[in-house]
Length: 374
Image 1: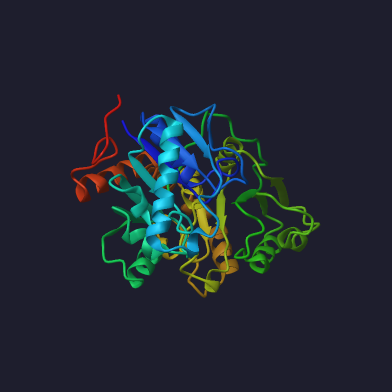
Image 2: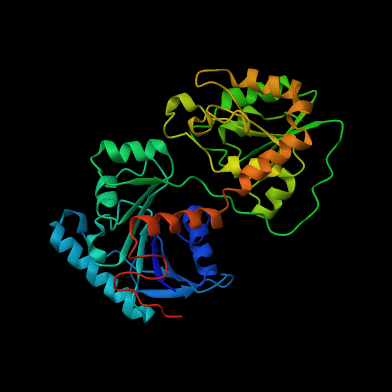
């Protein structure tokens, strides 16, 4: 198996996103994984094992490679980064076989990794420091969606850019759903309640219009100064849960009738072309009432979606009126089946196939300079 260095713009501690899920899945498959988040504030480089990891997964804590690195000539920068990588290998006691970079503000010239397998994976369109350099110097370039892939191509990346969309993390355990009033319709919104793209005005309009019939269950961090909190103040059909762990969220989702995606998409339709929460919603089986998401434009069988400049309140009202036909057992089953086709194990299988096809002499288990240490 391989030793893999994952470079992430997010730290290990905090909200888990794709980088963390890939790290755990790789460790679960027997690879040795080093996860390096943002640089620390001095102190010696060290590795900390992840206690509940499914395999050999360690977090690498290290300060920045050198001050002013981005202003240095390319050859000097790559040399310093290569020396840093050698220090990591000395600390780990083994050669790193794969450098898997999820960001383009550090280590973006992947030439520093030499003959190791180099993967660049971009999951945010607004990660826009040196995306073209990162993609061009990688052996494998991966984009979350078409807008990111198109951006890379427009910047001059002339190699294949592979699409690997959002992944689903399955819930653990089979806890019973909460006992909610049967005479009410239950709608959920999960995510960042302070994100600037959240359409607070439309949200408030929907909640007020459906007070007599619908309870709205909101999961995510907020404060009393959060715009949505203020807009919905005093409304009895809103339940504020704050941040909850994933098992609790999944348990409540299983009791919902409607799952909501509500963004001001017209602000930046390319940036908001999808949302990772959609897969979690689909796995619950509940109908998804969504603002415009271009990645799902051709999937009316999966979600109910407003046009780009359409009215979300009108869409939501239509979903409420058609709820029985939208939440049949067959409709719910089809949504769950789609979600299960996009789990992180499936995503990693997809990436392994990309590597095998594009770099036939390399893989996640063997390649130039790699050794099978099993």
